[in-house]
Structure formats: structure tokens, C-alpha cells
Image 1 (cartoon, rainbow, N blue to C red):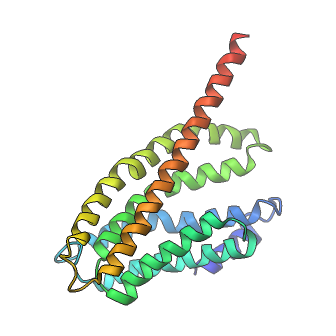
Image 2 (image 1 turned 45 degrees about the horizontal axis):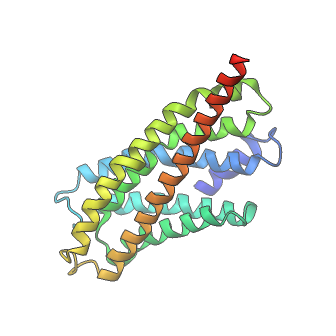
Image 3 (image 1 turned 90 degrees about the horizontal axis):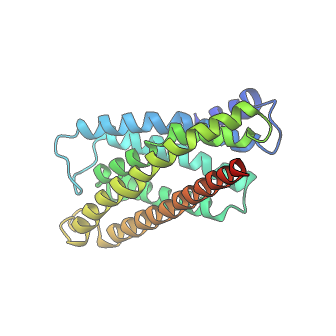
Length: 231
């Protein structure tokens, strides 16, 4: 499904875009059709779970949502390997994400509650981020795209900061404390729990670093505009 969506984006929706931007635009397209649906699917799967907890067994609905996201990240990983093989950071991110999702879905069959909550936090910014990214790809060519990019930057940065810099770390702390206590040891081996903690912790740290750099760049641009006005 995601391969088909990607191809529709590449050969139909973005066919008039430059070859330089078509792959990235198609990647954003499948991300748009994964992110927001994934949030609502994950929320529904969590709310329908009879017993919710970090060590609870996965329900069939939760496994379906995990499969949905595994399919997306696999397809987007192929996009990077084919078109942007030098983007080691995103390739590593997708491989690490797939490791967490696959071990939760197919190895231990427990812990989907934690993974889906984290998925919701991560994808809550997906729609705004992808529209912002698409506008950024064309901002040098289209004034409208530049205006959309400029308009979306502050609210997107703010939402991303709240989800990745505040809400996410709080939940991550609770998750880590539970798994490191050994309370899930009977159903989730410690090596799996520790690997999840390491992968998620690094992902949160990188996200905070990324959004911090964007904030600094935005402040720098605003200061430059103010200096030009004062001249």
C-alpha cells in the first residue's frame, strides 16, 4: 500500500516537480498518509485494550497498528537507501524504529501500549511537519510556498517542542523506570527493555537537538530582518 502511494506521489502528484525534489516530496506524501491516521489508530487501539500497562500483552488491534507503522517505515527506509543513501542519520533512525516496532510486534508480543503512546507523540506533529517540509522544498521557487513555510515555522516548532521536549521525555522516564525495575521481566527480556530505552532515549535527544537548531535559526533570521529594517 505505501509503495503504491509513494509511486502515485512520484509519478502523478509531483510529476511536474524537479527531479531533485520529487523523491523527498513523495516521502512526505506517504508520511502524511501514515502520521495522522497512525495517531487515531494508536489511540483507538490503546483505549480498547482491556488492561493497559507497560507489560500488557498486545491485542490484535494493537498488532495491526504496529504492522501499519512497520510497513510505512520499511517503505520510507527503502526511499532513503535508494535516493539518499548518504543520509546516515535518517537511515539509522528508521532502522532503530523498525527494531523497536518489530521486536514489540513479533518477538515479545508485549509492550504495545508503550510503543503506541510514543508513536502518538511522534506522529502528532506529522501533518504540520510534512506540509512545512513540502513548502520548504519549493520556497526558493514559489512565493506562496515561502509564505506557508514562514507562517508554519513558529507553530510547528512550538508543537514539536512540546511533544518531543516535554510530553515525550516525561512518558519516557516513566517507561524507563518501569522496565529497569524488572517488573516486566517475565514477559519482556531485559535486553529488549534496555534496547528500547536506549533507542527511544537517543531518538528523543536527537529530536531535541534538531528542534533547538531550528529555533536558533529562526531567531537568527528574525534578528537579521530587524537589523535590515533599522538601516
